[in-house]
Image (tube, rainbow, N blue to C red; front, top):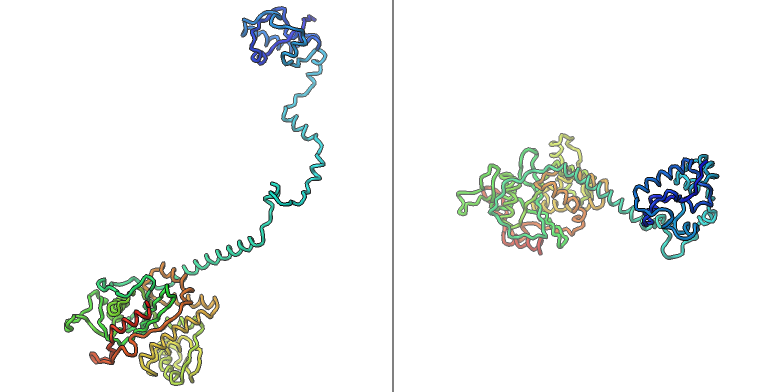
Length: 472
């Protein structure tokens, strides 16, 4: 076997780091400084590859000095000057082909698996209790919620659920209301008693027996809600007041009278609803009393009875004379409803729990006491008793009452306004309630017009009484 002295070859990377000119000599072996590692075998496959690689380098670097002219010092100094490559020698080459190649990552994984577990770390798994300061990172997310936070979250969740349920219930109930479009109003009538803190709503109770017909208004009550004073004033308007009827009739023509010097048509107040509906009635009240009214609720006999029955009746003090006269109205209602004529009859007076039929007869009673004056008082008493009963009953009865009211009322309010009043109703029920009757005891005289008994009122005094009760 041909032997040659071992001299080291420099690879590309080492040439790049060296940056010194070099030139290969024919007798020069790049592995000469590694002679102590064995004999350089030129027939070795691996060494032949290195020779080939070096020949290519010599072509790339023709100006490299020949031989060992660029080297100085002993071979040991050479090994210190340049990193040494571990080139397999003759006695190690025979074992190289038997070694299986292992990827570095697999070597790292195998070394990690062979590493024995750290027992000291396992023993420290049980942490000592934290004493103040910033808790360890592994324990910061494992804190238990305090009971106070849990209670707050539970309360907020319950309130949110109740709020959503209330909204759904109100939307359903508002959808049951009979909302009608507001008819033609007389824009020339300007109110002179109004305030942003006061809302006036007209409640119209009709004596009609036929829902399709507009009868005379048996009851006219203005409910004035003063948000600033937290008061509700219920003003009963006597139906026999003789006043100018101002506004538009149902056929769209303006009310007038050629025979009257001022051209105004005059009649009893309760005739306004017959001629022009709720719009003419509101215009007439606004013209005569200066009170701004834009919204109303209309209720008939059947609706009134259903609302009272939804509460389970109301308790009223009834005299024996009133009980006897009430039976006349009860019998009339039974006939209209197709019931037995003696149903709901009263045998005597006292503090009685009255159902819808009986309470309606009480509110319409006018032949006992001071005629229509006392009747308006009884109507206000019934409204007060309804409010008291609503405050006393439980949630189920309240819901039944609200449902009955929504199903039996007609109004010109928008559904959004009704939704708003649904939220405000519980607060309004806590307001102070005041009562007023127009005209007052000293603000009228009995009169006769066109063969009718009327009340000729002192209009300026009536306006002052309303202004004082509602706005002062």
